[in-house]
Length: 29
Image (cartoon, rainbow, N blue to C red; front, side, top):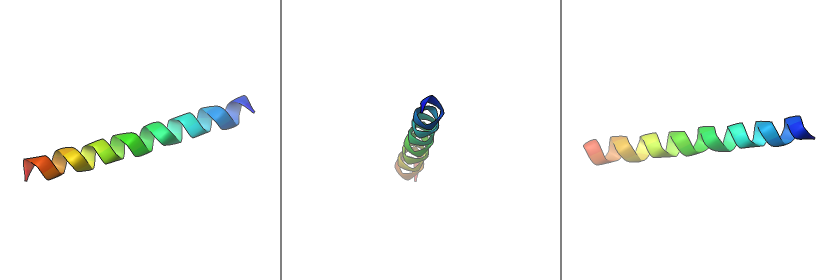
């Protein structure tokens, strides 16, 4: 169970960072 929660947390962090990167790239253009 703990492993599942950890994987979910990491996945959410990854998605958030990707979204943040897209936003940053969009602002720079």
